[in-house]
Image (cartoon, rainbow, N blue to C red; front, top):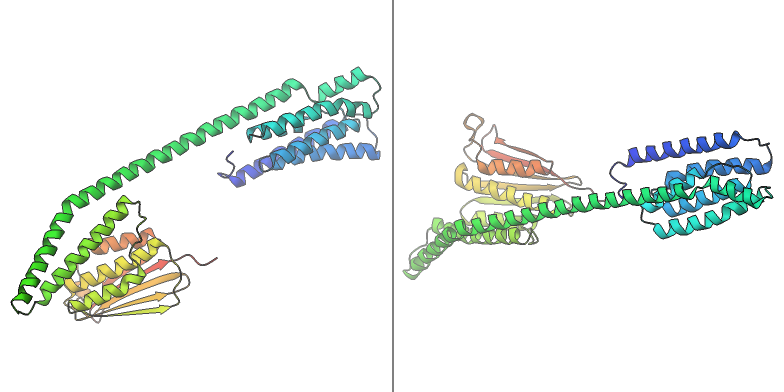
Length: 375
């Protein structure tokens, strides 16, 4: 039984039903000829308790079943000839929750106890006592309440199964699409990257064998080819394994900075604040922002220096990458796919990204990623 979809509305409805039913039972009980004796007051209290107990029928159907049954027997014994409507609601709720054995067992006990309660109320005629008990809890209505609860339970079960089937179908289609993308990436990129990597390594090997100085650009191509192959392999594994492969994150940023130094970029890394555990998505985004920023500096900035600063705050990670390149507000570069990808990643996590030239020259990328505070 699903009760968590609209908890506030469901709770208000339960209270409304319970209060209304308690009021109806109380009015019905007061309509008879009763005096203000202790027994009569007890009977009236049991009428109210039986109705109000229905508030908890979704959370605790079996205890509510017992309470409403005892209340019905109690106010019958006190001389109140009032139908056990609250108990019928409790039977319906118990059967709907799948508590069939408890509903049947309790109903048998209540059906047996009602005639005895009628006799205890002062009736001396056994036939009349059974008639009053039958009037208080008609077997037909009891069966109807149970059948209604079972029918609704089966309908909810079928609805849950249908929803689960839709989710499984959507998950299977997502898996198939992920594998298709992995195959496409493998077929379209792996060969070309392998060719670049092999050719660069051959060129480096030949130059060293001849005793020649290996150009820095060629070494950078060799390293970039190796890194591209590793990145592609990790991406393909993540796609095939449903993202179970540990992604690169904050711990790997130092490696990015060191690699930038090998191609002639004077890059520094500063991490401030106390590091906290962050989600894999945030961790991966930090790495991608620094990676794309350093790549853009190397390609477009004409810069000799770059600084990476990561501020670990209690509620956010702030990443700032500055360069001293030739960008100015008057010659702001056109945003490319790299900046667009960074912005999409940051926005998807609920963060903010600012990428723009500085007035004194150079370019700044600043991203703020919210993180969950420790509970």
